[in-house]
Length: 84
Length: 269
Image (cartoon, rainbow over all chains, first blue to last red; front, side):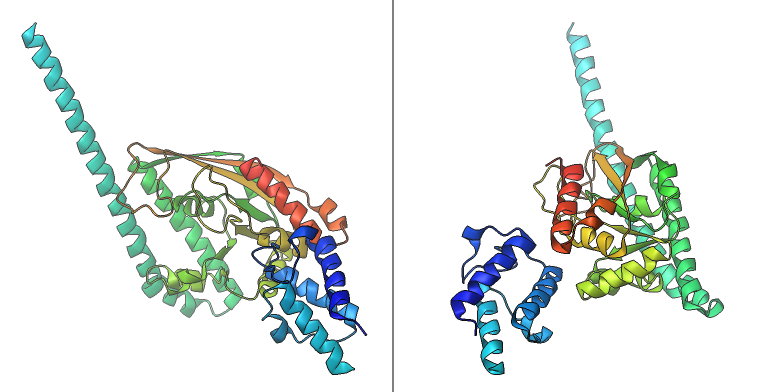
């Protein structure tokens, strides 16, 4: 099972390779849209990648609420523990 | 000598006076132009469109007819502004615009006028329009009947809509700056334009618009008119082939690269 730290590491890699985010900007409080320059289309791509990573379906209406990197880590951890 | 001095002086006053009269004339003519534009919109909404709706039952045919009507009316309106000497339009490479099929037409957006000018140059042009205009009392009816694309829908939905239209061979106009911008200001492009082009596999026709002196920029009231005839130069640039961006495996990276290319073209970054 994924720990919080592992989720953050995986997410950081995704943000770097998919969205050209620089590693030093990525921390739990970083805002996806303002600080990391994602847009709503990017968020859809990210949700798909996270589903691949966790093997679980992320409800789109729930994923729309995420604002920060920390929010995503929380959601992914919730998903993984719910399924466990 | 004193006589001459006084004569020259009064000549200067007369020139000042002429300037002032000329400026007032331009304010008056601009007001008149806005009035005619507004009345035109109302006439269309309440008279022309209901008639069109009655005689054209097919929604698709209707929307083309409305777009065609908008084209001819904008052409007339630009002719009217030119006649009043408020503006002078020069188009470089117009034939390239006319030969566009299924292209995304992308331009910078320095003034309210550029939309009207561009739409007067291409018949049957689809465009993405600010959602607030649907509730505008003067042209709400027009954007509604022409079935233009609202900018406040779900992003994927907008991309799908544009893809259908582009793949049917129609052109779609879009201002990636998102809003009117000061010339030379440090504007960051949104990636919507790139995402649409990549989603639809549509090449991008680049159009550069320059206005001197500037007028009707964002945040200036309509009566703060330009002191002289506004020269509008529309330069139709290259058609940007996006096939190399489509080869890029990751969509989000391709969209970023394409957006940088657009920024380079328009802002020279």
